[in-house]
Length: 332
Image (cartoon, rainbow, N blue to C red; front, top):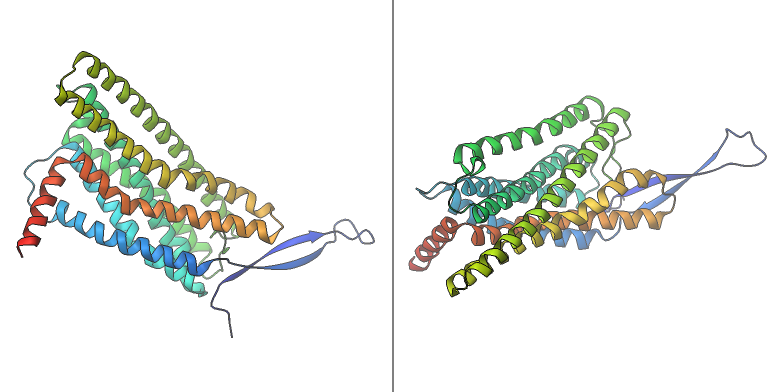
């Protein structure tokens, strides 16, 4: 009977002295995918928690009458949508871990993976835009920058989704054309077809460059915000101002911590995994990279459970709607 846990093989090559230099003996080494039950349980837990929290968030943002509109509300709604879709991607990844079916692996490694990464990078972009919005509100409290208008926020949000959908659509088209029905690499979820593999590497290298830019911008925004808050604190010593400053510091710190915990580990592991894995010839090394990959994807998915904290801290309208909705539930 076929094992329920997927396995994969990789080649180690050695050349015999008594043979021609271009002749090799190839040994097939079988590597079992480790710790599947642990990851299945962890992903299932994250899915259930994020599903409950994001259903509440979607209810508050999209199913209530909101008369107050702002740029930060536009970004919050888009962030909520991306988190909700990340949550919906998790059952497919759980099925991928639990099954050795070629069809499930193909769907997860192509369309499922593309959907997950589109929404993950959408979350990254919208968290950065929220930080920019918060920075401008602190630095220019009496002015409205062009980036803070609702119309601009909608245009930026639409451009973000289009920019993410385009490369993912190209990858999925190439996959359908060249690699449907092939068995993907279990550890890196990649295919042997050259054009598809090259597109995969280019997309991920590009997204890592963009991520580094966003991470640096977030850190700079945080430092600039702290600098401005210190200036305000020196010039104004009232209790109200001190409380406001502490709250602003806390909000920015929460945003930075969630961003770094969820997304930095994934990007530290992803690029080496793509380029180093084909050079590995020890099963333990490949398995170690696999465990790191799944742990960092799990952390990225955990962002969908942590973002509601950002909504609650950053958006007064969300807090008001959430409190009203909670009161209605208690009365019912």
